[in-house]
Image (cartoon, rainbow, N blue to C red; front, side, top):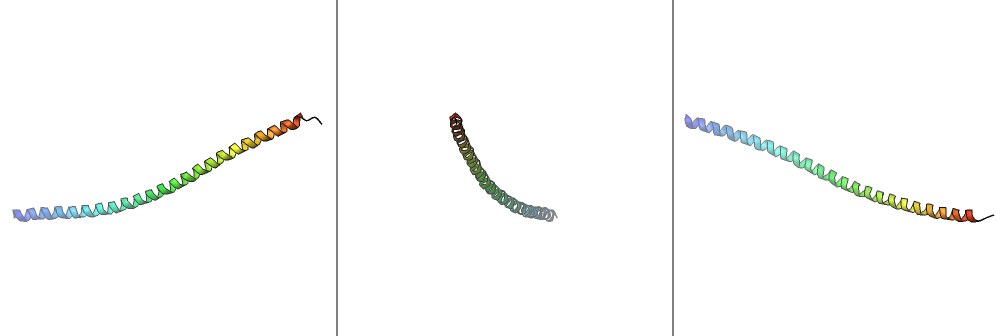
Length: 85
């Protein structure tokens, strides 16, 4: 009887371990899928960040050009104001 009891406990423990392994495999698959989704999102955000950096740089260049044009126009208007008609 004692041997039967030990085998029953061993079988129950093996069944529990098999279920646990199955659950862990499912969880692993789910986590791998989530990781892949996050990696794709990270790549998308990096590309978007690079695009925004480019837009910010273009904006700065436009502001610089605008300031240069404004300065040159003010200089021309100043010269015109000096001319007496």
